[in-house]
Length: 427
Image 1: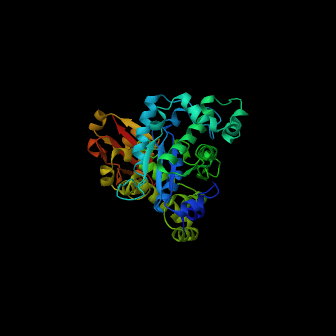
Image 2 (image 1 turned 90 degrees about the horizontal axis):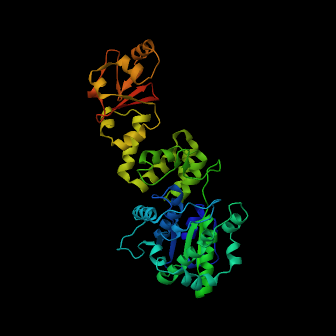
Image 3 (image 1 turned 180 degrees about the horizontal axis):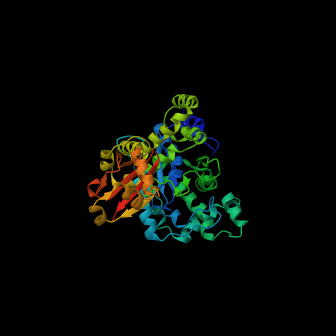
């Protein structure tokens, strides 16, 4: 099996230019993917192109990742109905630095291997290129007719919003990236999402017209959910790779909560396991769908890939606390960010440290503080039926709540039955 075969069975090819298979099979090839720093973190939507590069490297080829410090200043019109808000240079520099740190962990940049990955910033070769020299050296090779025929441009021309000259020139700048890498790194292949096809072919055409060289492109499908919304988005927004924006627990839960249809589709795309292993996994899942085998596999593999094995183990233990047995000791040793992620969205109340220091009866705590039930009689009845626990420990009517029960000196977790939780924050 070769690199193109791998992408094909995984459903990772949307379009490819003629001759690309012969290119990657003939010798060690070089390919690049570019990501603009429109935010200070990557999200799940970026992962597909990066995974293509990782497979590329696994087959012995050299991958290049570009952070678009220059293209990010312009804004890509592809797939956008309105012009992007232009970011100031300080924000762009911050975003670039954050993305470079994340990207450096996703491919093998070790100098000890012959196909070590390369991380570049296109601002480095664009910053000293004057406008006059650019339109003279690059702009003359592509006609306006050619540029206007691109889907991303044509759709905007037909809209009320229109397209600014700034965004219109984006394909030229990205095309020059390909030309630069072709000359400096012998890079003859660009990969990206299907919305990048126009920009990729502009680069190929520029290389052909200016240098007489031959270059290639591959795009992967843009992933959408069954409801048509963009993959990686939830009601709360993107699923980020930055643990400060999307905690490892939330990241893990995203994969766990995939539907069966989504999990089957994404298994081939995101997992690095071989085909037979994944086919067997799908068969096993079909026989016992209630065990959610595919979701658990994806959650484990992707959480480990992005956040590491230690974070994955913490997440599994955290999940046990909410959905399994869990213990008071496990709650105590969990780091605060993970703790708050686990109990995000549960009813939350506050109590002063002074009031708690005096001690509260369990009935008063349940009714007046946690507001778990509306009456003391109901609280007493449920306590007699062993219906409440505090910090994963059973409590009784005669129990007293005080500061000694506080987790990390700040939190109390009341549980009613198996699924109802209440977070009390001590102020």
